[in-house]
Length: 372
Image (cartoon, rainbow, N blue to C red; front, side, top):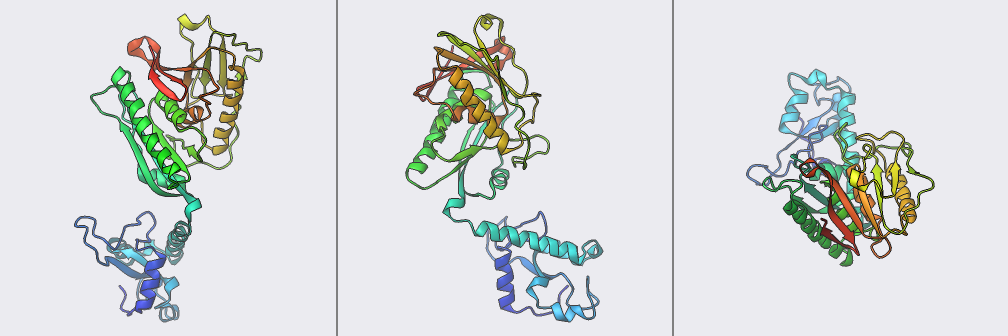
């Protein structure tokens, strides 16, 4: 442990660089407030990377006295991680490893602190039950995924009540209402110029995700993020192909009656027997699969093809949507719709208790109502 009296100015500068948080990789503990009692004080430790004495952890006869008060040789740590790097396990923590931890933490602090208004985003977190599973969205995970945009605040919409089962009319009615209220709050913040961008993190049945995007629209800046299973993350990957989006058949003619739009992205969709007499336009990919969407470029390619599909469907009286979609694409599908231009849209959902696919929500003129 350190025996050098570190100057107060150096401590202040180091605490500022670290934003008052532990610099040990993955910890980030707040060191100015006790998490249990909420009382404030300084709970951190100023730790040497190269010990201030030659016989200490990573110490050196020449360099220890030279670096004893050098801010680049000091880390702000919680008491636990200070003990870890200087205690019995100190040989597991090389000078290069600790310098890497310090540099990564302080770089992140500089980046976050440099964001002005144009770098901010508002988090819209939407959670709804999917079958027997409850959707859950972590605010912390969403904020990480939104970087380099800084998450200034959030609006939460939750309708995962265990007593209301996915598929019941009350579930759909509750979901439609709660999404309407949450999005109305977001629109109000845009109109009052309190926010300038929205990042959507939503887990819910596809019809409600489409309604969410439909109600949000695309007149305000924003994007929907994709929840991936492997790895468990909301963060986008770099690069990636466009998944081979395509429309079929090439000679599709919707006529003037109802037509079906099948979205075969997460998997192939079968048209129910009683609807097979209707014309069907399919928007698919080269190899439908779960966890298929990983990049922003793929989302943009999907939106482009949705617009092409809506042009082809423009002459029909009503569009029946059967969809196997990742959550981000379901939201973006709704966002690109033009309520005053496109025909009414009936969204189906897979619900075995009702004999397979059933109509659940109708979207028209910017509003949603229960189908059936």
